[in-house]
Length: 245
Image (cartoon, rainbow, N blue to C red):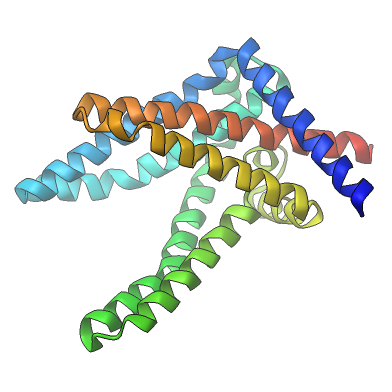
């Protein structure tokens, strides 16, 4: 068991280093998520502005645009995964990603539905707290929703790269199967990813206090960090495929 643990740690360290070197050699890998981060930031600021001023047009517009913003969040990691897998440039990956347009739209719809279902226990607990003044359902609902969201994140860890090679249903099945078969490594990589994102949120907090420009800059920094974590996924998946062959 000790030897197995050391081997796993060695593989993960190698993967993390290789992913960092890939980013260092190919800075264009940052661009897709930086672009979608800017779009998302503009959308969030517009929705916030509409809420503050009770501007109905802005709030309704933000609601209508949300599926597009969510789709871009699905699209950007697929482009990055395509660049890593095919060792292609940004233009080539953007062109080839159009072949997966239907699958990405389907993925966005499934993830929106999955996220909504996962949050039902939390909202039910909050409703019970408001109606009955009992905090216990809110705590239980919050914990249950957190577990459900983590399960979804765990299962779709390899989805950006599995979408490239399979139909929609098989993409989800293969991603869940790969995560299950490599549960220790995926858990460790998720912890590493959350740690990096937490660090990004902590270090950019003061920047966001500078106002709109700070908010957008902070989200751009977070997107750079998350690009690194996205790259780790296809690199690990491709190594597993090479081993099987």
